[in-house]
Length: 415
Image (cartoon, rainbow, N blue to C red; front, side):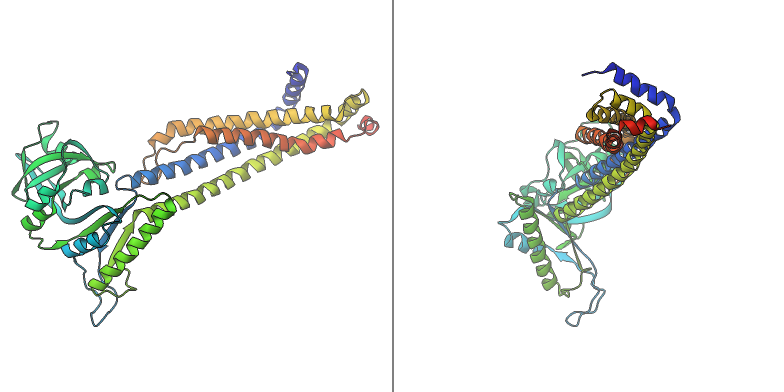
């Protein structure tokens, strides 16, 4: 029930102590403001990491050769490992039942791609058809490579959208045109886009067999890429992924005579494992942010509680008169709690709104690699409102309980 007299009392008390009430409210508002900003940053870090992983399939496994750092079976360290076609063919056949997509990659860095008077240096990659799904790419026009292209070593090319814009400008008449890659003509059969952005779209794809023949690659490949078939749970998927990478590493080290403990000769990037590691880290960071925010709010609540104790002390005689006239302890407790919850909630909501407004305006401007569009969703905002109400009740309870225990005769003697 709305009690007008109670509200008049509250505003009268506040008006008598404007500065004290303002400073108390400021501590609560700043606590909520800091909590909202920290949670927004935590969400922004989560968004940033998700965006970083969008460029490739979430469960992709990439294998890169390196340089040996340990002597093994009479071979000196410092050997550069070169992957071969049979590395890909063996591992693909051996793990056929487990694999979803697979591709070897033969790269030509800085390949000169030319169309009429336009040219640019881009990364040329010889791949298998599955590479489209490994890179999470989608077609803007035309098609991707197919098995026939690989079998027949056809001179066709799929352009990244950035490459298409550089060479063909705004023209959509791309399919069927011929571009030159390092002086050799290739027919454009498709244009792709990639969620990884312009960096990922600054590449062109050709059949791996064509790339190896045209660019004197022989049987050399630069990397291996795989995804495993989906599992029912994340834990099962992670276990299968770790088991596959372990078998793959063991095979490649044995075939290329690499010491089992040499971790520099073969590098395996397990995206699923990395994803879990990053999200575990984000979870811990969010917990830390919550802890800092809650501690800040507690500091504000302690301030409110101290102020309410002072107010109870100042109104001791008034409380004695109320009790002498028949006021019940619950009525006294309600009076103090009402004021405490109002001050805490109003100040906290002010801090909440300020934090949300700041994130709304500044958040979209933040475009760093690992913080992207920091926001606070409705559930988090609702949680902070609940925290405010609880904090106000806690801040006022002990002063209210003390006020309720004041004996009228002692209160009336208070000066």
